[in-house]
Image 1: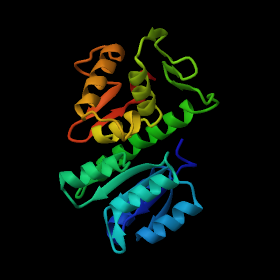
Image 2: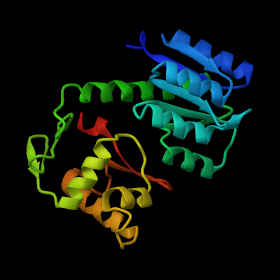
Image 3: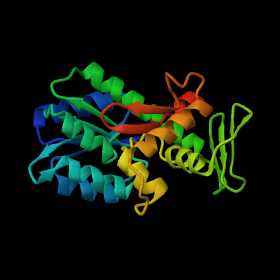
Image 4: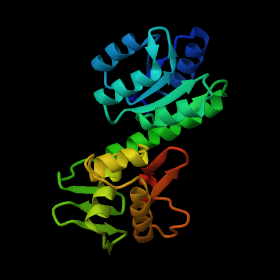
Length: 238
């Protein structure tokens, strides 16, 4: 599966970079290496990568800014942040900017490899779920969202959603695994002009879970990422 997958390692510490590159090559990936934000952006414009491992502290800029630029270039790109920073704020900001996972130095190569395998499974799942789908139809495993008829079907059963619940589910499902804060969802689904507060998002998430989840008290489809926000997990409907 990995033979044609390209990974970009953005790391200015030569010893750590060598370990990551060796580990990825042993797993069957093709690997490029960058030591700076500028070089990483140049490479990302030249080559379509499946995964980027991204150090946050780089000589010519902040990895958080680079994360945003990389996601703008390729929204489907998986990003694993690798950092010596242990601040919860850095992790939260990184996830909100589009990073898929975060690992703090020091870490074991076994943990690194496990994170990479998990992210690549997600990449493959997204590729398979998006092939040959009509523009108004989103099919993720057993979940079907039909925008033309405003109809949602899960495991063969129709789910009755309000207009806002439908828009919320479609928004999350079209960007699986990405974590959105309540303020981001409020702006994207309701619009900036909406006069409600962020608890509006909580209420709609809860109602959506009551209709989708087998156990709304332990949601699997629309997950809570504590301290950050919510995300859609396609593996639970595969």
